[in-house]
View (tube, rainbow, N blue to C red):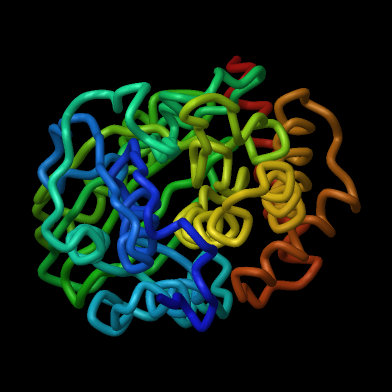
Length: 349
């Protein structure tokens, strides 16, 4: 059996694997493993949100297309809007982002599979995969873990909204289109209740004065912004061994919270290093070196240090990864807003 033109290593198709976490990354791994002939059992918590996901996170980068194709699915079926521009704190910049139907994609990746609402047993499997995201339920706790609280809402309006991002402390608020009248709106911040931030910004109240807005659903969640380099170990030896993927091992951008494509990419790296735990760790750290740089910026902001040209260059380089067409002047302005907001919120009055 082959997968993307590669021969599946001998014996993998006979493996019995447990995957803890049936979200985006866990579902993607499930699909690739079952396509390769593995026996895979899914385990997850009962979700109490309307869409069955926490968080739902509908936005991602253009890498999404290739990754979905690798699972044997058509990405066009799930892409809702391709975003060519985004307004960041009043500055309109060219971009190459997209929103997608995450619940539908997860549903198709799982292909009707069901999961058990309990932790996986510690025996009976050749390997257990921790895909539990911010919970990191099976791997050891992380020292100096950075967890961002977020709130998010699905809203519908009778007039178009602006596709926008607003920086708030170490975090941001967003409004991204899912259709001509439906939007994903939310906020994540390290410093305070994100619901209070949205209320203070007046996005819901002020908009309703100009047109009608209906909130279809909403939920609270958390996002790990720790980065992979501070999220070791990725593998715990044993019988069975436990390997982590996605957000459970910090594969989320510490500054912007982008974790969809990185989580799926971590699955590819796991499969490429299936029998090589040291190789897997090295591959993850190399692939996401840029996340370490972003984490360094977050740490500098948390310590109240003066940010300078080094931090600006990091933001500039990483913005190009998301195809944001910004220059050093715009990046410097964003960095100053981040620093000023953090100092203000961390030291009120």
